[in-house]
Amino acid sequence: MIFVFKLNKSKIVFILLFLFLIIIANFNFLYNRFVYLMYDKSSLKIHSHFLNCQINTVVSEPSNKVYIKTVVKNSNGKVMPGAKVEITIEEGLGEILTLSRTTNKYGELLSVYIPPESHEINPLNPLIVTIKSKIKDTDIYSSLSFKLIPVPVVFVHGYQESSMVFDNMNEFLVSKGFTTLSVDFDSTKGVVFASNELKKFLKEKKSEFLKEGILVNKFTLISHSLGGLVSRYYTSSEDYLEHENVYKMIFLSVPHSGSHIASIGKNYFNDRSIKDLVPDSPLFSTTFSNMINEGLNSSIQVGNIYSQYDEVVTLESAALDEWNIKTEIFSVEENKFTMDNLLDGSILEAPNHKGILNNKKVFERIHQMLKEKLDYPVDKKKEILRPF
Image (cartoon, rainbow, N blue to C red; front, top):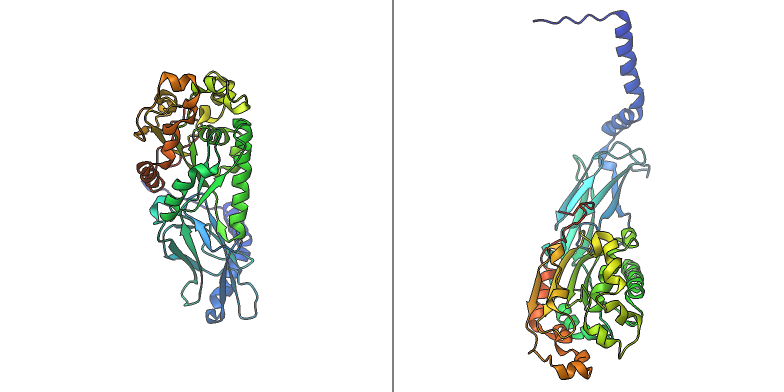
């Protein structure tokens, strides 16, 4: 069957008008392309700049995007719209995204560099990335280079402790090429207070890194005991949605459901934190359950380590089974739990509970966790899209 289309005068006028409007709408683009095609390209200049600021180092983590502006000008210094530009990664890993391959009316082209996951690089041998912007069909180019480093580690200490408790672990991880930081706070003032201190600390450190030319968007938190509850509270709060600055959380003997020893501890320490640690405190009975994903953010990778014979935290309390996170158990010391040291309060010295911070096998496992992709907590409400 053959269809015959007949064009009457009104249809022809409509088509011509439509084509005319298309030409008018794209006049600047077509004009710029014509000028560029006729121009002597050997006299063009191209320059690339970081939009973030002047940086020399980028933390390797996909949300840590690097924004680049490329400008093409002629020999007289005037911008050249319509120039075709090729942007490639000449050296290193990552991905380049551009909205256009042609400069806009300001002679500019914007692109975004997305770093690879942190575990894809070697901490002891930082990767150099070189991004090349080249005018198509010429040998004229501009390049930017920077170093890729792993996500910095932040230690979050527990109750009646300070950042010094991580000294040995810190020395080990620094020897493996990681940048480490420690937050200090008054551990007696409660989880909410410490969470605010952690929030301020991460914000300040991000700014300090930037002043040194290091682009950091997220940190890995290694938290012991009460520090794990502090990390959970911060990353599950509404405040966190503004910052989203945590990449991984690694928990070490954390009382995720509270500690029965806290009830004994109240006889020796009458403060906000010891009250928070009691299993039936509001923190565990209502607060966490009303926070993001019931207190464990599903957008953050999680590792969970427990010290066998821990005097302060039971295995049941340390577990994160309801989020499908595996608990890895390490034998640190022998079982020293007796009725005598329970009654006289010496159990609060907790050699196993603190010994996990000075165990080489634990150090090695943490090192491995930093170099591999960890599990994401199950999203209980199926509201947050988990990264791939």
